[in-house]
Amino acid sequence: MRELADDQPAARALWQRHLDEGVPYEVNHRSVPQGGPHIWLQAAVKAAGVTPEIIHLPDDPAQRLPADVIAKIEVAYLTRDIRFSNLYESYGDTVKAATNLKWANFVSTGIDQHPFLPALHERKVRLTTSAGSNGEPVGHTAVCGLLMLARNFPRWIAAQREHKWDPARGDAVPRDLRGQTVIVVGLGTIGATVAKMCQALEMKVIGLRRSPKRDGDPVDEMHTLDKLPALLPKCDWLVLACPYTKETHQLVNAKTLALMPKHSYLVNVARGGCADEKALITALQTKQIAGAYLDVFEKEPLPADSPLWDIPNVIVSPHNASASSGNDIRAAKIFTENIKLYAAGQRMENEQS
Image (cartoon, rainbow, N blue to C red):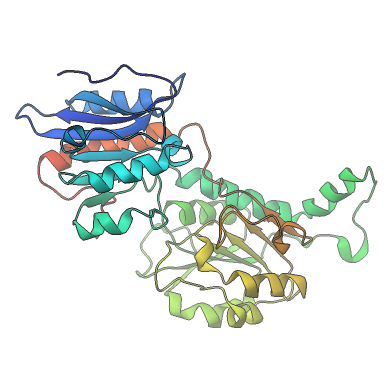
């Protein structure tokens, strides 16, 4: 198999691979030094018994691959380093122009944010995600945000910036976390991780999802999403760990926020569209709820003039809750199995319907 370009640390690549019968595959990645996506994807493809032909996108984001090269692309892989580089637009243009594209794989869990997605839907390109590869880190980060709010870290951090010794006294003393009720919306890898950790903290865990409770679910109660309004008045924490769908669009809104106790908190590691941001800002400013940890927003990056930056008891992170060193190898393992399923003509793991 001919390698079309040498590997370069600054390059984004399309991997075209062939099975023994000559079916072409292609994976997109930008190589990074010391064991990033490039290393793990190479290992994944090798483990699946496929020999890659590597096609690099030009380093110059204004340049595009020749049409005859694009025409050969059958499988594309969008990795994390490409998603957040200046070659992302080039990747989008390439997959839109790749008329032979049959399968597009994404290193992320959610894919609704990509502007080229409608073109792939229209051509019925098979789409897979790496759901589950970063679920534990997101869950860990969500619980970290919960604990910081529960133990009043924003107060201490603000005092530290002012070199002020400000121990909690009186009404500022945090409530015991044991026995508090957390509602976790979505019981995939992220939500299940949150639920397990909250149970370890001896909190009462209520799960919400479409399907009934299964044996082994780390929850004390399981309900369907339509029961949320009835459950909110007794919650201390509302954690959003669900996919962004029509059903979850602005799940948190003025009405639901009004049902939450004034001492309750919101944690959103799902999607910004799951919460009505304007209503949330009002609820936080008026102390309708006590605070929030937010990793996702309606508009990203979060505008510099957003009030969320400055509201006390609000922790903001830049849609980065998933960041963890082991994500790429976990995603590569999922991709390895999917290569085999794709070659066999079977439905793949995390394939979107």
